[in-house]
Image (cartoon, rainbow, N blue to C red; front, side):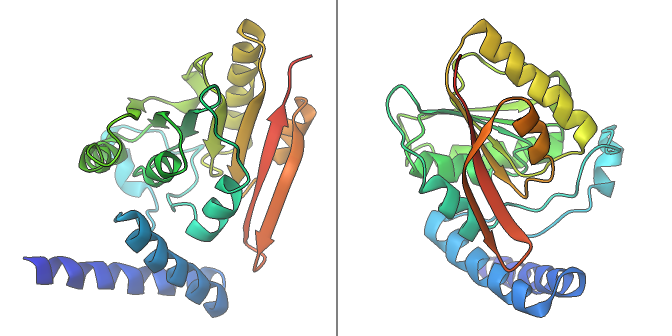
Length: 232
């Protein structure tokens, strides 16, 4: 059984490599696969690969505003998380569009204590919950939660200090998410950090009063930024 599992896992990496090489370029594909293998081993996860989301139609999910599923690259992810300062008063993160839960576990390794994933796919939510359960003994003091809900209607908890996004949907939905963020900040004024990978709608956050405090880019397509909004 173990042999079959690893054989299928290798097949998924090969499939992922050719997808990246065809849609981007072979150099980038090699870079991504290298960091996928390194990251999955480091965090003991199995979240690599991509999904065109067509199967989610069977769940009754509206994918018209969604981008495809592809987990955040570990290289960019760690670049961004390494810039954070996690304290007892700044350790509540929400991953909007959490997919299979990669970022939830990485966030726990970096010191977040209350971690919530929001995902509109029941299939992805189930997978994220499986991963969380497998890590309970590693992080007994971390409170995890998965919310199966459309990002546009999700009310941002007022205790949230950090939000993670990996370009999970188009600008129409992002505008609603930013409005939800603003409503939370109006209810409870506080500093809020947004970690944004592949920040295609960054301008919407800048227009809303966020400031970019960190930016990184690698091989043209791998990029991310940290945005912050302070009260007042």
